[in-house]
Length: 322
Image (tube, rainbow, N blue to C red; front, side, top):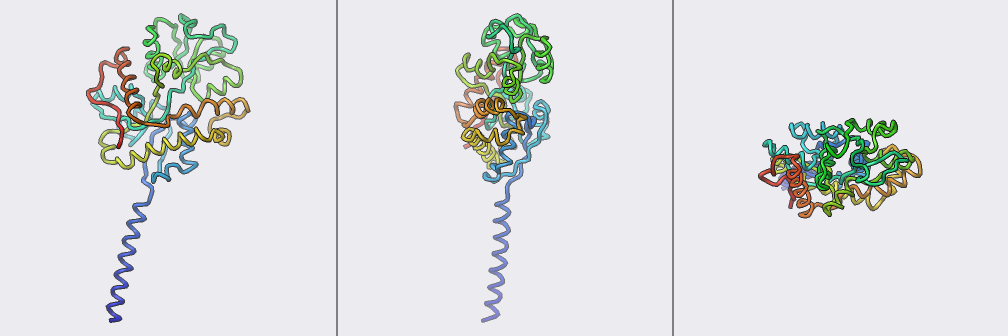
């Protein structure tokens, strides 16, 4: 009797250890590598907040953010060198037309680009600046595409209605300082920093222009992956979307995070911090639904109308995970 009892006890202990092992293994955060933009960017700030406050761990994920220049990050995703990454709507549409079945399945960032002039410029509207020198990024970039879309909505032609001066992001600021252009594009957080310092003046943003023209926010980059990866990792994909939505709400409801983590944005002065508190939280979408998908679909259709892409993809490039 005692021998049988001992054997039963040992079997129960072994079973408990096996069950415990698999339970702990199941509870371990799922590792995902996510291709992000540079750290010094609005979405770079959000991804760092996710790690600092363990927002990914709350969803059962352990996200490894790989930071690069946005164009390189998107290229690596399309070449399957990254599991998941940022991707712009028009880039997703172009990829699908080339047979690359990528899908946008979550939100990340509204358009963060400001249109700025020298602080003492006599111009205050975009209409007044038609025909003037416009500093902008190269034609291959999303920034150029976004501005071409806005111009088309205004029945303008970007190339003929402005004297374009092409350069990189750092070039734009120098163009303004050297009075080589009358208008230029600057991204957050650089735009808030320069505005607060009184070095430049913002006349509008691409997001504001798009809202005035279409009634919707301007989707800039979203969360994307290949369709087969999403199919094989649906649970993780859903958790990834929840992570970013929770992080966006966290920043929106706690703007003091911007002052607490001001070094992540390379800001120091009271004016810089105050302006970033006002502007940054609103750049992160806090919902992803059928309306979001419809707005992106409309954006892509307008890109077709503007001749930026040849036609609509046969299948939707957006996805709502249920």
